[in-house]
Image 1: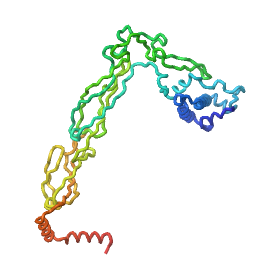
Image 2: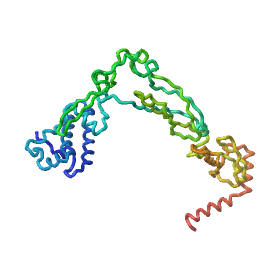
Image 3: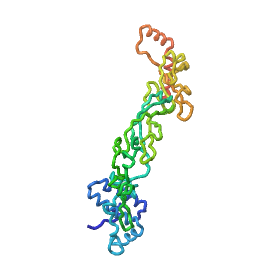
Image 4: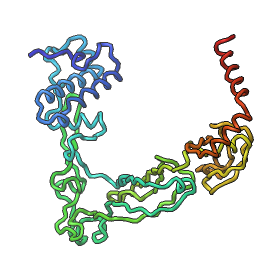
Length: 374
């Protein structure tokens, strides 16, 4: 079967740059990599074809020769040296271009030096007031910690852990392969010690050789005044324990603030609605307004219309990084009574007759003229 054009394999034009070529190769190699397509012979064949094309075109001399002579090569024998890295070489190619992440799982695990522990997240619900004024909470976090009996070695006694004889404690087995580009080394986890570098003959009875145990820890969290919904508090070193003496990860406490019955928060300002009577709106009055610190008195002027918003300075929420406070915005709404007795109805009718509706009608007809003219 005739080979496809290398540029066609990578989906490139002949004037493609090195950056374009590497980008195309990364995309295709990831798509057809055997680790992502287990048992798929077509994907494996495509992966080998992609490797072969990239190996030739990514090398300036080989690319120049290919552009001149095609698959036959300058000697008429083709690019026989560029036929992939064999079954064990998929990891080499993938590691070179994808950072050795290894989609296949444990097959590429290798012994490392001290490694930082992973981070943890805890979701904490608090009240509106607790967010506004700050508080202190105690939470329980489940995490894996070094076994206190074996100090994280996994062995019952110090002499029960020995260096692996196959990898000499490195946790890795290296396999060298010669290619047209030189010698490539494929590094895999040692199958005897599973990449640990040590063999435990007599495991710790508490952790059973796992080196870590599950612990529930109580941790005190200081919630600062002014924290808002979906913000997080970082507790350094309270995450998972590190490996091989590495530092512990961090704990992120994600805050959820429960809604308030009266207030709505926007930034550091708070908003609320307050009902008033017609008499209070018409004549002006001193009303009681709810605030985070308790009820406060506020004078509304006579003739206040429903929906009017009043601003009470420094009655909002404290800024996270400072002592300044937001404001409280109060919207007053005139409450119309739904049930009136006969005496109340009579008085309102008398009032309506006394004040008349001439002024209201005049205002309404003025607006009509502005809209329709006349």
